[in-house]
Image 1 (spheres, rainbow, N blue to C red):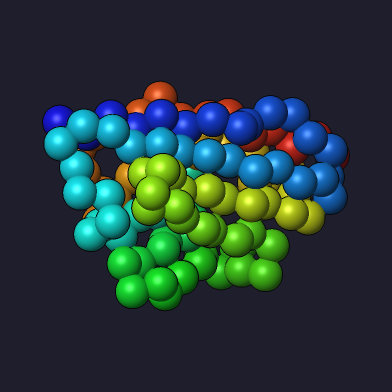
Image 2: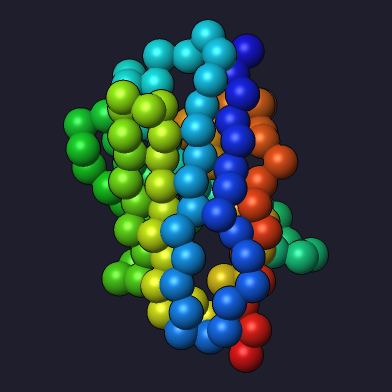
Length: 115
């Protein structure tokens, strides 16, 4: 069983920045798994945001490309999401998970961007 704990969310104004963190624990070989961030806005389905593969490659949703940066620290079993130039449409609960995602979702961390 894998436990995923996200943190770092909050309330920011348009154009602001936040850095999200996620730590993984449990029976989980973190360094051998692609990790990703997902988000779910009110009334919407959860969507893919960014991926950091085991080979070091990164992939982003078009909506966040150029504004968000995903990184990982295998020694800490952690994955991060640096978010800049935030927009109101980035408001959502943000989750980390493997890619493709497992059934073990954490509680997420809420990001609210005010206009």
